[in-house]
Image 1 (cartoon, rainbow, N blue to C red):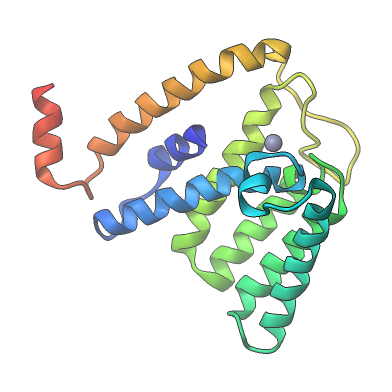
Image 2: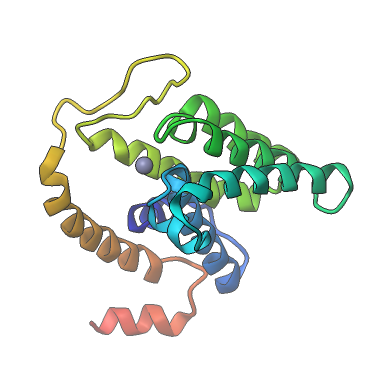
Length: 199
Ligand SMILES: [Zn+2]
């Protein structure tokens, strides 16, 4: 999540004010958690779906069906309902780290969201999402970035089992990096920049 926020802060074009900036960061945080919704024991699955583990994929699939039905009946914006519904059903249907971790799936969904829904939402949500997927390339088990094409992508040097020891350090580094980027954003009130200049 911290990496998703740092990546979004580094790349996000200026937005209209502090409120919109923090909304964007919230979307980036959500986007960075979404790929692991297909893992019944992930943080987002446990928080979002306080149900027995075996029921969580069923609930996600039903949420996808519900989103599609809402879109078709006018109960939700068409783009949000259709794209969200397809993604949720795919996340429930396919095994962990396949559908939700594929750029072949993720990039078109983010692009369509920007075109059909709202670029101001698609950008931070997409950058958080893609930061998660690309971050998983560092793990020794790799990621099928081009799923449904078989084969996994991983960096030449992976973190492997050491990941669990290194991860907290990377998170602290990403949080520090985010703080530096945040105080320098033009949307932040002037007193923040002045206060940070004193430190
Ligand atoms: Zn992942």
